[in-house]
Image 1 (cartoon, helix red, strand yellow):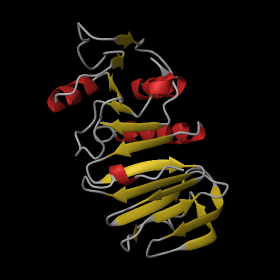
Image 2 (cartoon, rainbow, N blue to C red):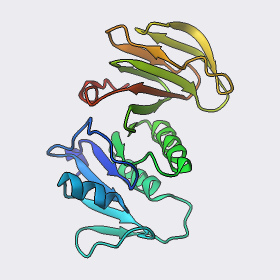
Image 3 (tube, rainbow, N blue to C red):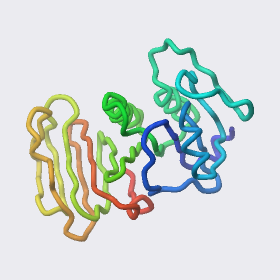
Length: 215
């Protein structure tokens, strides 16, 4: 893989199928994480790489495959993210990472935090929401409700501009959801994390993905 040619990375897991907001294009890299192969089959997309321990799905008999041990610290999705970061991808989209077991959804939200800590931008898609984690600044265009949560402790120096409820140099605590249920007023929203790590999530019905403005 030539790092000069890198565009975006897409990871498809075994979770629920959701509307495609961002679609792989020429130059993007597509990974099926274990049972995510079924997701891609339904979409008619061929992965560039298949990763997994195949404890819940049949191992493919063709394609580029990295087989993982069943007993490991990384989930299949985390291993896929590590792979993407190692090869220099700075924008990672995760589909099939929600639904089913709720602990898997939480694990993938924590994976977004891992991506942000490595100076990259990750997006996790559920049927109604898009999620990302930021350690710096993020601008996006919500079409309805959006929420901002602290991941770990209290974030100081937080600013939210462009939404109905704004904040300047404020605090968001991980034990009080003051950032829940803000909403769009028809213009871009900018969230600055201050000294914290923030989960930003917004309602979307397949429109907003190509308008992301990464920090």
